[in-house]
Structure formats: C-alpha cells, structure tokens
Image (tube, rainbow, N blue to C red; front, top):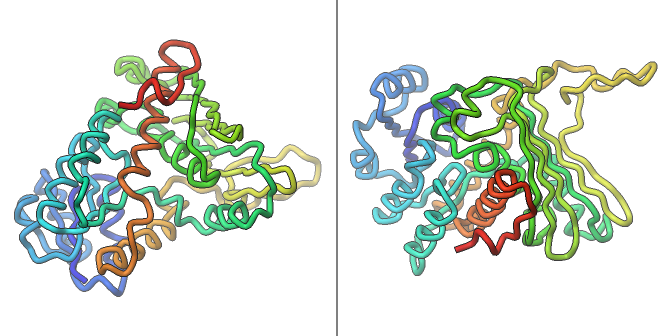
Length: 333
C-alpha cells in the first residue's frame, strides 16, 4: 500500500520510522510545513516528499496518517475525507469539544473511514486487560486507574498550543478507562498544580493533575498525570473488580523503585518515553489502519469515540478551574 503522512514533528518523525518498517507499505509519502523536516525524513527513511498537503492528497495514496498539530486536525480530516481517503488522525479530535462536535456533524453520512489515534488500545497488556473485563473475569468493576507520568516536560512552544494537560496528556487515559469499562462518563472532579517551569502557568496549564471520573454504572476512574516523573515514563492501567484485579504496564521496565526488603522487581532499565514504551502498539495500530483503509475492517476508534474522551478532558479542565465537580452534560454541545 501507498500511505501518506502529514506532520513530521516529534511524533510524526517517529511514526515515519515505524511506518517504513511495515512490509505491507510499499511507499511512504510525507509532508510538513517545514521543508527541513521533510528532507530529514526523506533522507533517513527513503520516503517520497510532497511539497504540500494538496500534493500529498493527489499523490495516489491509499490512506493518510495525520500527525500535525492539534489546531489542524479537524481541517485535515475533512480534507482527507473530501478526497475520499481513509485517515488515521492523532488525538485529540480537535481543539475543543465544540469543534470536534462540528466535525462529527460534517462527517455524517460519509462512508470514508476515520480512525482516531489512541495507540494504547493496541498495547498487548491493555488489550489483555480489556479482554478479561469483557469475558466477565473481574466481576463488576469497582475502580479503574490509568496513569501517565512523563519523565520531562515538552517545550514551551508545544505547551502554548497543546490544549492543556487534560486534553493533551490525560485524554489518553480518558479514552482508555472509557474503552476498558465500556461505560460513558457522567461526572468528573479534577485538580492540578504547578511546581515546575513557569510557562505552564503562563498558558493557564498545570504540570501535575489528578481526576476522578464517575461512570454511568457507578464504576470510578482515577487518572494521574505529571510532566515531571524523574525515574522514567510510567504508563499503567489497573482494573479492580468484585472478583479479580488485573494490571498492565507493570513489567521489568516499570519506572518505580521498591522499598520492600529484598525486592528485586522491577530490575530492568526504566522506560524513557512513549517511543520505547509503545512502539509495538503504534505498529499494531498502523497495521490495523491498513486493514481499515483496504475496507477489511471498520474504524475501531471513530471520531465519536475520540469526542467522548475530549468531553471528559473538557469537563476536567472546567472542574480544575472552578474547583467543583462537573457533569459531562455541562460541556457537551
């Protein structure tokens, strides 16, 4: 297959390496607003350069992966769909829930598949936890905990347009706990703080946050995020039920140090960032998208799915700002 890739920043350049290693992809066509980024990826992976988004969409590709900035997601999804090209777009769906809802309305009636990029759904451990829940092995779910602790913050320029902690980082956790439980969130209570770089405060953001999410059946979700986890990149999932409990992300590279006498686990080199923690998941996500683009599968994570995670993020942002619980219906439009 011939695949297009729009956006070659940190995540896009990483995706180019993953895509170039998938045998089913015969050729990769790439573009970015920065010509030096295009040249770098072309030189490194032998990709084909396109001078613009329009040129890429007209380059006879079978599908497109969007890794550009959040402010371009909605427009690029619409451009791909208008060209009849299946598209996988990185999270979040759009800059706001309202913009995402408008996108969903504009896509109504279209049969061009759109997949939103939540790669944790393809992580082997998390997929096994989901399967255990679906088989009823855990009984009824009491609590689901999802954790994303980054080892260091992104740049100030990134934070300026990221949409904030809950939309940029926590949205992965919100999608995960919704997917795992199979339930819709009805209310959140979120808090955040700043003890690191001052630019977070400058942009009305936080560097550490926690949210409690109440689901329709009474299950509780607990989400923890930070930009400053010195030991490494800690992404975990715990699911506790009336009969059993399971966890994903607790392997030998889990970035934690046990203080129990004689404990040797975990003993490996800690995960450093998403590039090593989730490379197999990203590859599995892209291979699934190839089947979606070929018409073999429906989109496993639709715009509607992505929008539900965005509503949770939006409610958390309001909750943290107003110091009160916020029901999802308050932000949904």
